[in-house]
Length: 104
Image (cartoon, rainbow, N blue to C red; front, side, top):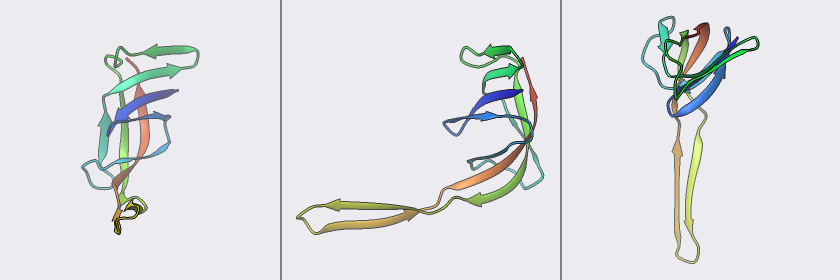
């Protein structure tokens, strides 16, 4: 069984037991989290596609870790103008363990 969910403007394909790194969600490690924007649910040969979401479907998980992603270097440059800017960014992220998928 798997589902496609949307969170943080991105789509993820998940199954029970998967570890998922998403943009920052609230909650301490060990607290439950629920996703309700489910775009597709598949169990065996039966596939339910939402329009745009599957009614009554949800994915539940547990927050494992609150952290930050690797640093991304942003470098701006304009040739022949002596213009150079370097900036770093670390995105806040949450690691979630998927515990259950309930289809609609």
